[in-house]
Image (cartoon, rainbow, N blue to C red; front, side, top):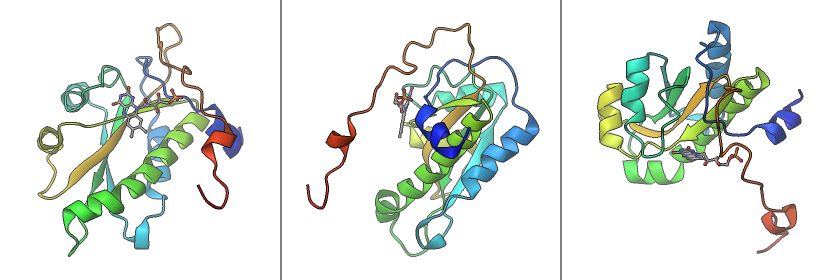
Length: 176
Ligand SMILES: Cc1cc2nc3c(=O)[nH]c(=O)nc-3n(C[C@H](O)[C@H](O)[C@H](O)COP(=O)(O)O)c2cc1C
């Protein structure tokens, strides 16, 4: 599958087989995240990779729409290390989410190419997540992704149900 096919075909998947991911696949996914560029090349993003079942369940409880997460083979929390001298609010608003999003998408596309499905999830309870992950002060979980082989036998009613708008609606040329 070439990169463009991976981009077009990838669909968020919320039902996973109880099959662990091979170690080299996990490393490849994490490497893909590490290679994402960042504003000023500051590399403010870190990954917390979770495979332990109890830790997956505890982390899942930090989001409001996460029933798929405890059954994942891997969850990756994208954590922002605060930029020195920059107010956290400004950093979190302007730079960090874009950098973390690039890393998350890299990971999901690299996984899909290996036949591994994924779905991002929002971590609504930031303080709880900080405690579950044992983050140092000032570090924030910006988003997270669940990974696993898709369970062909399971009902995954949301999969592939959200077509994208037409290119003509999406793109404005030169000015809005
Ligand atoms: C920032 C972000 C947060 C998301 N949070 C959740 C979530 O908490 N729970 C969930 O099931 N899906 C979550 N999603 C997945 C979206 O619902 C998904 O991208 C959407 O269904 C369209 O993808 P699809 O066409 O592959 O289904 C999130 C996606 C993004 C980009």
